[in-house]
Image 1 (tube, one colour):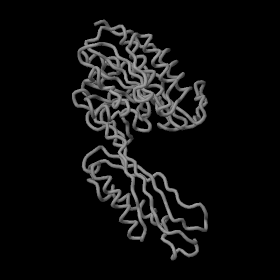
Image 2 (spheres, one colour):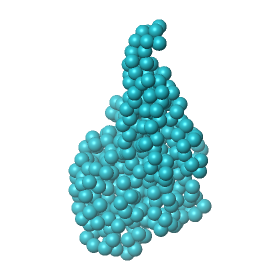
Image 3 (cartoon, rainbow, N blue to C red):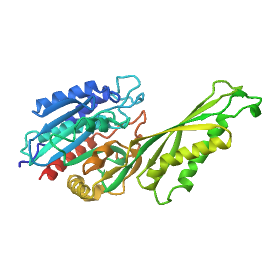
Length: 382
């Protein structure tokens, strides 16, 4: 098989900047999906739009092993603060996590693989709604892993915690599970000057928050990673009124194991037990959004070897993990695969974190990501 064409850096950057200027939130990616479908059809891929609502699938090949390459498309409800020519044109929406780059990389990989005689099939999954953690599941429910059956899945995330020119790849869990809980504390309202006549849900909520922190400090194996964060609290509307209700919202993150399995029960027991001690009641709604992202050992070795050939073995880093979550977990729990972190921070430092209104990337990372995914697909199918 002949080698793929060189990466077209100018086209990569232009595509990323165009998508960056037109961000779309989860399950609203109509313009992005249309652009992707048009490009894939021009490359003679078999294109199926509307997979997982707004997702797009491109297929090349009819036999042999099938490898899936995934790129997420959605933006965030963030107002961009960057003064750059390609600044978002949509008020309150921004590609603040690199998904614009993922789409551009996916399209460049598709262009490079299109003319090649592959030893198998390649399927591109341009996925909606990663940020709300159910786009991958929606695509799987619509059959993205079938016809032909997918044998392995690969993906990348542009990563501002790593400098450009480096890639993080390791086997096992690399991104955490994402769980969401909502707790409603019901007390008895009354006058703020007569708290003895009330059951103060604000006070109860404060004790619930403190007690939830003990789940990590006292109910978890100290060698197992976990995070419990209460991120919202809402109660009352007047300074002189004790309300009858307080609402809490938060998240639990783990890499799996016993704490992952026990967390729903522990959160519910803690909230209800604390509330009962004060004479209040608590109801808990606990939802699993995605499991940990777990990389396959063999395919992590394959992708790491490819990365070494792209940027040099000394620039391939292990031990790169995050308690952030990713619904790539749904793909990797269904088929073996690997998810890599491609460094996108400028070498001089000063990169803004993901989900920040000043987030941006070093666009050389687009070239590295495109080369990594292209060569990984070829190596796997060979």
